[in-house]
Length: 205
Image (cartoon, rainbow, N blue to C red; front, top):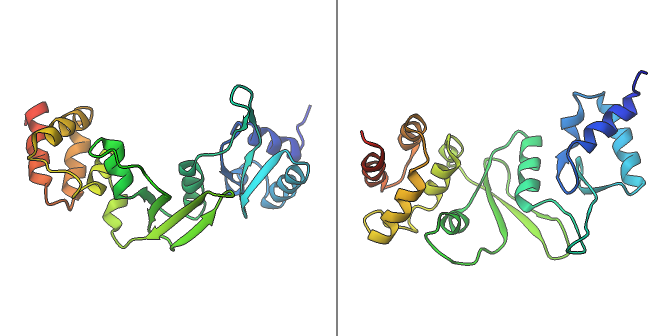
């Protein structure tokens, strides 16, 4: 039996699962933009999906154990928005430093650097996502997310300090040589030579 265009769109939406943000542009390969918009509006009106902003939605869900709604993460929302606009984003210094283990400083608002325009998006009563424009285009050219985070965290660690060197050894251990060499060339860090020394100390020249 032939599946209707409406059902094709609904099936595609279901594949995202609950609590995952998606752009309606991602559904244009399933059916025409007009059909997609019409079906999405129908699903939204029937309270089956939630609208984050124009063109970005997620399917509602409920965590039975925690007894709370399942909602998209700030990272998921930010990347969905950026991808829908053909823009790049990455985290900022404090987040990178915390994730890599150089600091236990508590991260505040969800801040993302972008090559797009600066803006603040409210995604809930007390939640907001901040996009900050940066001219540092090289930040979006890293092959490895770890190397990108390391670049962002520059200034928050000292590659010559024993404790930070141990963290760097752990971080760099899992990066393939080809990827590392491409990314270290792209790096603007004033510690890139020391980082190179640590990498080759682990992996060999």
